[in-house]
Amino acid sequence: MSKRQSIYSLTMAANVAGLVSLALFSAACDSKAADAGANAAAEKSKPSAFTVTDAQRARLQIVTVTAVGFRPNVEVTGTVAFDGNHSTQILSPISGPVIRLLVQQGALVAAGQALATVSSPDFAAAVAGYRKAIEAARNTQRILKLNEQLFQNDALARSALDQSRTDAAAAAADMDASIQVLKALGVDDNTVAAIRDGKHTGPVESAIRAPIAGTVVEKLVNPGQLLTAGATPAFTVANLNTMWVLANVYERDLALVHRGEAVEILTEASLKPISGSVDYVAAIVDPGTKATTVRIIANNAERLLRRDMFVRLRVRSSVERRGLLVPVAAVLRDNDNLPFVFVTNSDGAFLRRRISLGYRVDDRYEITEGLAAGEKVVADGALFIQFAESQ
Image 1 (tube, rainbow, N blue to C red):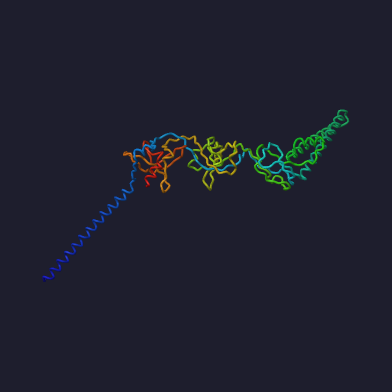
Image 2 (cartoon, rainbow, N blue to C red):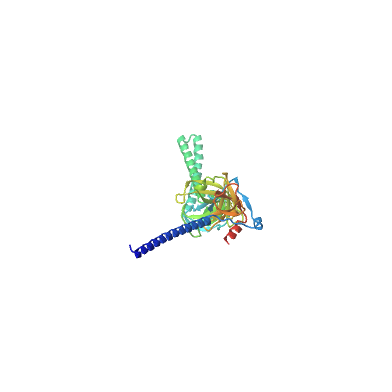
């Protein structure tokens, strides 16, 4: 090998060694950079502690989390309806045109009070039928008395007397039936008595009457309107002292809602809650919403509730539970709308702690995950820490 070839070989070997060393150095640098990045990410992922001055700490309310017994509140929404046990839609009992309206919407009425008058050939026929029944009853009674005298004088057979008695009883029954027809058509007792006594009553008209006492909440007819017996709605009368509130309760809360439990009804129409109680829990689940209908009877003495009003409900369950409760002021929300609290550590600094909420109990929340008994959280002043932490 010549001298020039030897020098070339040595040079190539040196270059290869340099490249290998450079590659090893670069790999080591990359490994260190990756480790540093991972350490930085890990440090960043750790919750950072936030400290305050002694003067600021003095203004914070820090509470110790303890396990206590409580009765949860079930909060749902509902819709107001008339009390179905004390309200009714009134159908016209007779066909014909409306002659006069005797009450207007909003009027207080008594049971049996006339609301409107109706003219009808059917009604006139009922009056005529009653008068015929009266005459038939009187005539059969007169014949019966005569036949009884004849029978006592042996001038009439027993069979003829029995037939007279049957005819008189049938006529009396027909008269009673015709009276019931008139009353069903809205004729009052005084008018029925005047017809029976043959007194002049003037033009007798049928009346649509209130079956219960209450308020006329709907007037659905007008003078001259033609009504169909048993089909045309004329009025709605309701006792407004109580109302129904219908709510949907889901399976998670259903075990906490029972008949008789107290309910607070919250509406913008009232500055204070309206009292009520659970009256009925349905035995079936709505197939569409998978919720169970619960009916609440609400006190409406102040007339604040209206039909179809949308309200919020707070059912105070009688079922006692045990768990961790913190003040409502301690629970905050992050940018993802997830709940958290500030927990104090051993150094007196504050750390964010993600939590899971259970039921609300007055001014406290039940904590189902994220806290343990004995830990200390910030109540009043938590918003200040959240704001200062973001600066």
